Length: 95
Image 1 (cartoon, helix red, strand yellow):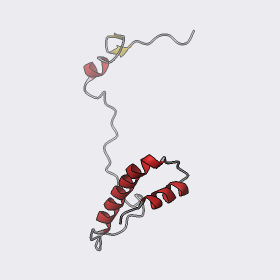
Image 2: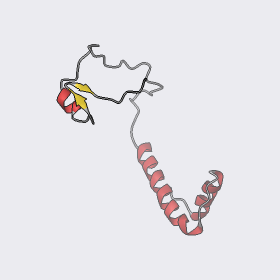
Image 3: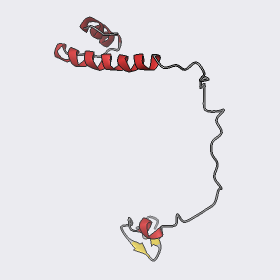
Image 4: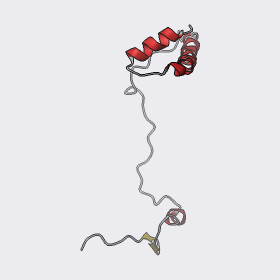
């Protein structure tokens, strides 16, 4: 399917988008590209693929809930503007 300039103007009007006359060919090319992708997706055979209606049925991978220091304190503290031993030094904010 290919859109003509009149259809591009109508789509812009329905979307409440102001398009200058000299921008219509660019919009026409972009919209035709999008429609090309949709036609490619429509050509796929999805007969055996069940529809995905949500992710609630999907079990998420779980990891053990363990507190760690990340194993790289020197890399982390290298980003600190000021440090003392293995701690960040911040200005006092409470008097």
